[in-house]
Image (cartoon, rainbow, N blue to C red):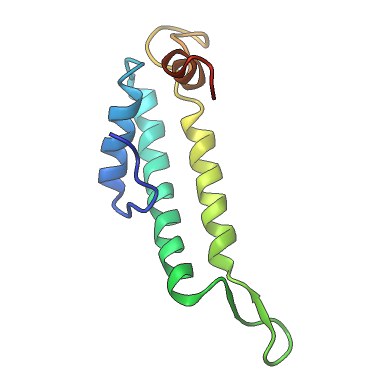
Length: 116
C-alpha cells in the first residue's frame, strides 16, 4: 500500500504509513507516535493542495489593487510536508538505545538496493 499524496483523511494516511514502514521495520510505540504526528500534517497538505487547485496558484492580493501573489497555501503545504518528513525520518524500528534497529532510510535502501 502506498501513501496517496491526495488523501485528506489522517486515519487512512496513518494506516498506509504503518503498512509501508512495517514491511521493513518492527515499529515501537515511539515510532507510532511519530506517525500519529505526521499523518495529520500530510492530510493538511493534501487539503491545501485542493484549495490551491480550486482557487489557482496566483490570487489577488499584495499592497496594490489588482496585484496577484502566490497562493499562501502552496508554501504552507510544503512546510507541512517538510515537517512530516522530519518526523518520519526519526522512525528507527525495534531495539534499545539511540542505535536501536535501523532507521527508515536504511530500510528503504535495503528494499530498493540503495537506488534512492
